Length: 148
Image (cartoon, rainbow, N blue to C red; front, side):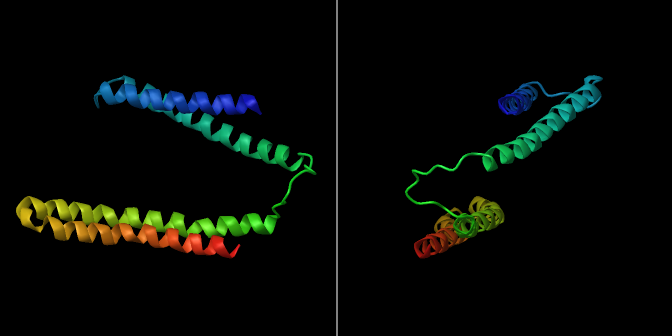
């Protein structure tokens, strides 16, 4: 299983290094290397996804075959684990929604500030309201964890 983890790490580092390289040295559209680049990146991405799936399947097998530790003070059942995942879902969805809301509000705020700089305070209020969505999700998660 360690070889899969090493394969995934090398593949991910290769994609990051390629992205950094081409950020500083962009490829021209009519360059002949563009076809080679697409093939290489597609192969690297396919290797990464295949290694991730292999790690997932082999990792599940190793975790399910692990011996039970008798010294555990409090054992977490499958139901408790699912309840904890369910308690974390509101925070995840709320942060995604906040990100979706802040994008257009921030763009509109910048456009308005460029025309009327005295309106800066109001735009901060609107951005705060959009970002408050994430805080509501966090509060709901904390309340749900208090019930577990």
